[in-house]
Length: 611
Ligand code: M6R
Image 1: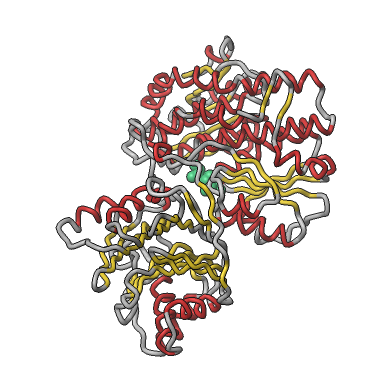
Image 2 (image 1 turned 90 degrees about the vertical axis):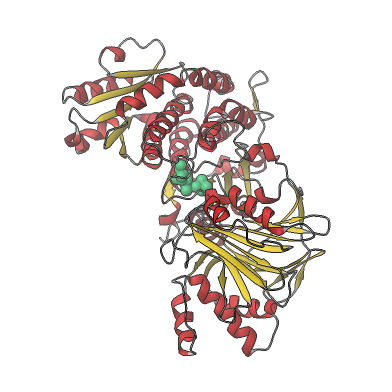
């Protein structure tokens, strides 16, 4: 959460910083602020989105060659002008932005208050900044040294960027737990929570690691550890174009990302799956194949939508590979004392690769000797780097807060993984394997076919947009998709929604059913079809409104459901990828009809880098 941007070099800093903030707004949009150095420190900040700050400071002298900017997802202190970053130190000479949480800020605040410091905001950031300044003054050291000393006392997670009036072309940055990318240009440097603010200027980036400190000047980038030893920056080439992070003519990133799925799923399969040859090439799996073949257990850790992908993977891997799988919420796993045995493999699933709970969960498991396999979308992200092996989803940048194309990418990767392991282990017949390869290969085309009927979902969405609650029910492989459908609707439309295994509905949720409750059934043709037909009858008997996602050619369910949406026929293991698309579109259209900012729904942030 929170986006940070910085620039130092010959160009005007403000336009780079403000454009960068717009690209990082998906990380939080409670307030915006910039600090610029130009013969002194100038700070402009405001509650609300980047555009609001931009409007508020029209006409100000924004000339500067060194600047930092912040877009906030509030943790300590409500969204307000005063809690907005950057914060300035007691002397007014330092400015700082921060992404993360300083856990021992109360103790540090007490110490500073006893020394006479006062604070204008409620933030942990202002405390850390003054703590740094206090060290700088007492130890008579430079800012770099003060930051190093201060960070040794700090617990929690952070990326911080600091400006100092006394060094007008320098940005001091440090990281632990939150992401920081430094772009290396010709006589200039860019800083960001991800690479999007620097894409049009440079493709050469350095991913800063935990406990590293960077001294960034136009012509120089010095990386050090907290022990003041220099580290050689490792420069990586970015494989991303500006177009990938622009709306490209769509009204919303969410719609663009839904519509992109035929090509993102294709990109995910490309070069890996060859149905004719009967092969799956995944070097991350191949390098670890003996571990997977011998694995006693696979533990999947993830949050949110990625957790739903893990749940479906559990069903598929247990079916095809006969390896026991456990699916854990990363936030729970990291604080329990889980039993990790030799031979267990941890699979971490994350779009951003930066989710704090998932990251720490795998760090803990790694300390206990577990092998970590990452299924990640963002190349070079923290989870990708800490994993022993992995497979990227190749969905491209996902900007909309609601995860869409990254989820179907995760499903495609996890299905390929399962098929590859099953083949190597000999737990799948040749015919089934070949057939599933063909089925997977056909997914992009079938997704295109579904998207052509998007208008049908729009009509359904308009019919039910006034609902206050909704139930999503599915069985077997479609149960995780019911959970995902409910999560999407909640996020994007603010309608209260619950996902359940369809049979479990009788054990409580059925009490909610009346003529006002829409119940979405994911009822594609599979081994549970007759059972789910009975569940539909049970809802209809209580006058619930049934919206059913069904397979083309189904002539049973249309006679009993209020609304149906058809998806092409597919093997039951593959069908969930297809059923996901109507879930996404339904939520999108309900959200739009209700006037929700679907790309930035309230209270959410794309990348949850605080626990
Ligand atoms: O980046 P990650 O996949 O680790 O993120 C996990 C969740 O925060 C994320 O899936 C969240 O639930 C999305 N908003 C869902 O649309």
